[in-house]
Image (cartoon, rainbow over the protein chains, first blue to last red):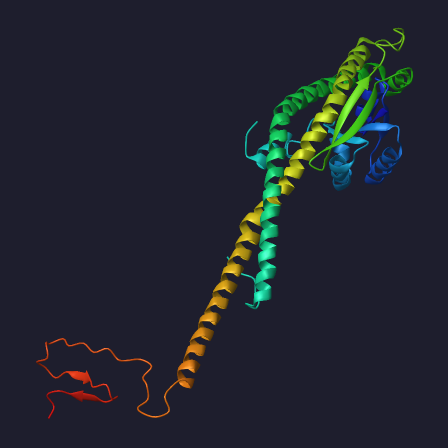
Length: 101
Length: 245
C-alpha cells in the first residue's frame, strides 16, 4: 500500500522528492474531497496530513485519526512548525493518566 | 447524594437491587479495562514522545532545506525533478484490537532511490532537501503506528475513566442510597403492621366481664421511702393516695 500526503505546497513537494503522491489542499472543501478519495482508495495505507491543512476540517480529521483502521491518518507539523497552542502528545497522556512521561 | 424518586415498594427494591448489581459488575469490568489501557499507554508513551520529537525535528530541517532548494532552483524545476522519482516505500497496515480499540501494526519495505535524478541542472540544495525528506520518510511507518496507537489508547482511556467515575461516584451511591431508603421504609411499615396486629389481638382477646385490662401499667416510683404523698396503683384502675384521708 502507498503513503499519501495531503498538505500545503512545500510539504507535498518535499515528499514528492521521495516519490510520495501528494494532494495540495487550500480549502476545507478540497480537504474533504481529498480525504474522501483517500479513504475510498484501497491502495492507500497511510495518509499524512499537515497540521495547517488539518485545521481546515478538524472534526473530520480527528475522527479519522481515532477510528479509521485503513488508511491510518497521521498529522505532521506544517512548514511553519507545530502549533504551540495545541496540546502535545505528552500533555494529553499526562492529563489522562496523571503521570508525567 | 440524591436517591432516586421511586415509590418504596418491594418490586422497586428488587429492580434497583438488580441495577445496583449490574452497576457494580460494570464497574469492576471497566476498572480492569482502565488498568489495562493505562499499562499499555504507559508502556508506549515514552517511546512515542521521543520518536515524535525526533521526527518533527527532522521534518523541520527538511522543510528548511526544501525552502533553500526552491530558492535555488525554482518550484517548477523541482516539480519536474520529483516526476523522475518512480519507486518509493511500500507499507502494509495490519489492524488488530486492544480492548476494542483498533490498533495498527505497520510493516514497510523498499524506499525511494538514492539518486533518481541526474546531477546536471540540479543543485546541492536539492540533494540536501531530498536526503532530508528521505530520512523523514524512513521514520513514517513507525511514527504512524506509534502515534495512532497512543492517540487512540489515550482517547479510549479518557472515555473509560469518565464511565468508571460516573459509576463509582454517581450511579452506585445513588442505587445504594435508594436501596437503603426502600429497605428502611419497608421495615417501618412491617413494624407498624405487627403493632397493629398485636393491638387487634389484645382487643379481640380481652375479657368481656370485669374491669378492662390495661395495655400498659404506669410505673410508679417511691422516691421518699413511703413518707410523702405517694400515689399508688391499687390495681383496680384507680389511683389513690395513702395519706389523703
